[in-house]
Length: 400
Image 1 (cartoon, rainbow, N blue to C red):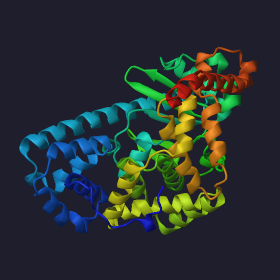
Image 2 (image 1 turned 60 degrees about the horizontal axis):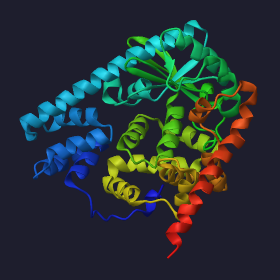
Image 3 (image 1 turned 45 degrees about the horizontal axis):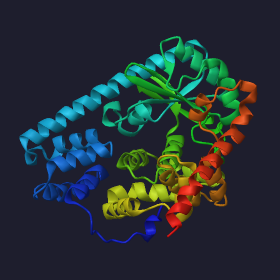
Image 4 (image 1 turned 135 degrees about the vertical axis):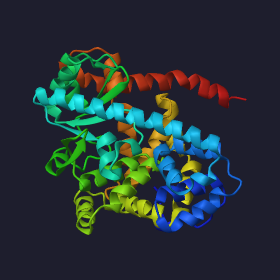
């Protein structure tokens, strides 16, 4: 991620709709008059609504316009936006109810669980689960509890998206500590045995997320969740991993910071220092604070993200591996690793992204659990085979 302090104030390439949306999301009460002036211009309202949908902030846009500028919105446009909000709210309410059912099933099986992002983050950041768009449920369990959690959810109708049999999960856990995705009609649940990918964030031990917890009220009942400080840390890591290309992640962090005490901010920086993530967290906090006070810098950052492209090595590795979108994934990983205080992991990160098998690979190749380590040379061999098969076409393109 580009350092916020080095951004220019150049505003070329920014649409009026983007400028208005960023200022709305900043939540600065002093900017209301400025935003109303922008909305009074010849605005493409459909483009504004689509931009909000793309960035996952439709509920926040609807709330702001209803409170501050409903008189400026064409009636048909406002009706369409209200319909989108109601659809998003209905989905959020459904998933929040489903979350309580899933946590109840896991509690009955004596599996310790904490929700990540989703309804818990929405309540902690905005006080209302309907003000944040989310499409699935993320749950954190202890690594040793993953097979039991999987079995417990299977008993209430959830099935693995990839068809992973529960009996093979212990071997998968030993190899990769994976995320297991399960689905039931209208809902996807991701069971995580680590809050973030270990290949990227190996400096934060899994036990850390369980040491500082908070509570959040869902449907009138309290549930354990990450503490505000840990939610801030996870939000900073998650957004940085994806280069903050979606405004929703910036707004989440900004909302959490808005209600954070000075002591919590200091605690956040203390964790960042401890885990070698001070540069990453500091840059994330600067970006989130800029959303409210210096929105031009957020606009400039989004423009830089849009214009970024993979380097030569990433393009070459993407062609060798033959994996869709790998070039973009490698670029994001490089940017993320360069933000960490320990920056010597970039090339190792490239290799792990290419050669270390993913959960999808484990599902495709049915080996017994005790042979799980063979997935590593199998994946390397498959990639090498792809590269060899591509050599004739490469030379053919180079020949006159």
